[in-house]
Length: 606
Image (cartoon, rainbow, N blue to C red; front, top):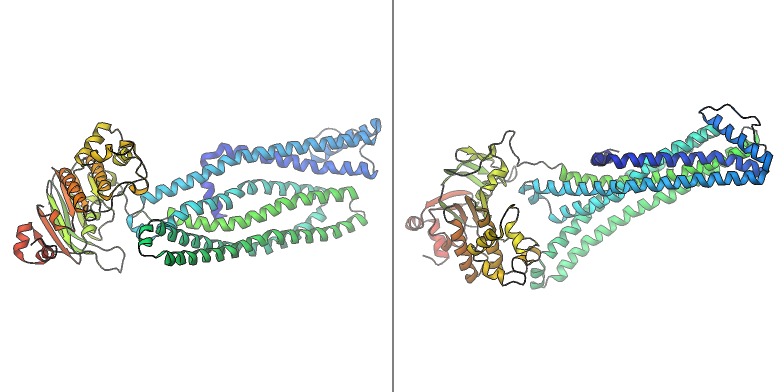
């Protein structure tokens, strides 16, 4: 039930729908239960039994008085108009009661629908927002395909396995309580006998339900594994085809697909067992009940018409009991989905504002890395070791070195994509952990090696996230980034859709768009992470011109693979194995004849 209570937390915004649903369910149950005693006079007429009482009772608000009043009225009709007219009267009353019952049953479902769809929307929205708030380290540990599976498939599982039974959980207990109350009114002894049989049935069904939860959790994990392979395939079609690896990748997907199928087969078989098992146990209970009830009728403890009405009341219990049983199975499946969803919602937000964060709107003096060391996880090797670095306002600092030296990590620590393990980073003398994260990142513009674009228009990709931007400012930023010319030559100009990840554009065009995006923000601090390393010579020239324009009068941290792009930096930081081993201008480092000189020689620049 804990999983259900977690879901019901989202229902707080839908109290009106909940109230209307509960009211309609209560009325539906009321009219359903009232129809049960109507069967007794119906049967008494058919069986030729008498209809007491003959005198009109004094009106009181209790079941016995209301029943006697009905019998009195029915007896009056029989006396004046005959049994046929009385039978029509009883049948009309039954039809009217069932009309009201089904009307309120529909209205209950009518008000439940926006509640279900609203809760699913809210869960999915919260998952998306939580995903964006998580640190980059979380995505290093989790697979993207599995995260997509949780946000899509697991949320839908909650819809079908838990929210789908909310109506059952509200309605069926009311039906069961109402029907059992009527059974107690007709025969307490027979009711007690039935409840013992139902208890035995519930114990048997509960054992299967607990197993189903485990199998459902396995099924959902296998779905995540399969989605991961699919996501990798869709993002790597060019490489797969280029290496003739279709057969290999197909085999990999087939393996995951088969494992998912096997897990799903076991879960479905377990689930499908619930309905026939419940029906078998139900008919066994009915047979035992008929035997016991016959003995009650035979010894005069119960009239035949009352016993048949009791059976009708019991059958009224069976359907909601079966629904309740199915709901229990669904809840077990849904609990596994909730656990996976909570894996995201309960993930710790390591990178967050301090209790009383400071605002910052401008960068005035310098950035300082003081004795900074960093590792991704405990017991891993240090990625950075005792880094000390000062970057003054307006300086261009280049970070160079072999892959894995720690260059990108230094840059990632500044906007707090990760937090330092030891030491501190200061901006204008204030530890960045004491600053508002949103304000800190607003100071920065980031251009990465991979041009990250979205399936949207060119205009929206440049504006991305900014409000109150004029079209003239967007065009000016595009011109400064050497992007305006190719943009106006596209089919729709700035309103051209660039496809998934900008696949309709060339690599150089995509990179110039990201530079235009950074220019539009007019950041005081730039982080350029190998922004030209993946481009051809012609594109590199255009992008480099755009970057030069971007860096004017700004503080910049450049991570470079091609050393030709950083020779004019104010200071070049040479890194190896997470440490700064050399620093200085290009000419000074060449004269040292050290690690930097070796890198220059390797690229044929010496």
